[in-house]
Image (cartoon, rainbow, N blue to C red; front, side, top):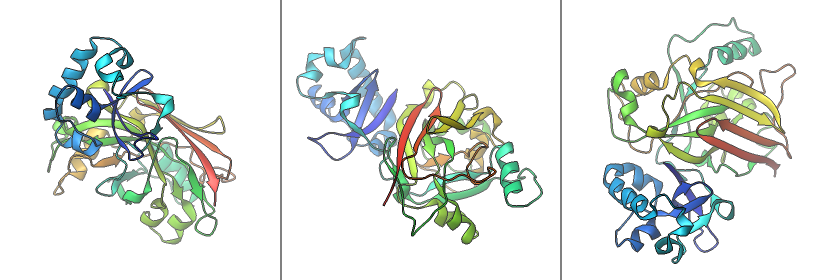
Length: 312
């Protein structure tokens, strides 16, 4: 299944929807139509997903293979929307905790980073971990805002993001995927001048809106193998990054096991799994985003985002 957080002119606050083709079903309204109390927010769905599966099954029983708009019970109460008539927010519009991120988790990116910084290239022996503030969350079609008084070296990083579905600590690698609710696309937009100036990742990674995510969360059962997903990023239709998640140094299973050692992972936690080579600062000459650019971030089997760059 594909779940979104979306808003309309009538309901401007992002709330939970279920995607089917080119339509989105307002889950809360659909639940009311079935005389069931349903979740209104993505976080609530994730936290009690096993409970809400009964509601979702009732919805699918009602549709019986038809489009949502063909089911009078839903269409007559305004619960069905064309996907191009709504506004999509980040799937979890305001994460409860910092977004956890992996640095240098693709071999070629680790090498290009080392070379760009004048270091001898070597692969990390241990996972490089940092976080982004919750205020970085941005929608899949939201603007990436450049403020030259803050940063003039704004870069891109296409990533597969993992959304945790249940509480776990000291999770075994072989059990790790059982803790995944789903997957989404993420762009770890980075202010490189701030990142290098402060000698660490957090500030340069945490500018407001510098984490577009979406367009939806695809549930884990829809992704046969998270290590076999083509991933790419384009700027103005020019491919800048193209790889496959099979090229990760630390797999999704390993990342979850590493993060959960002595630290509890909770439903709704977001993990960005690292970016492949092709980032702007490592190019010769370096390239950075500018006003008017359009960034498309895509993972096959998950979805594609399209974010315009604007300047204040």
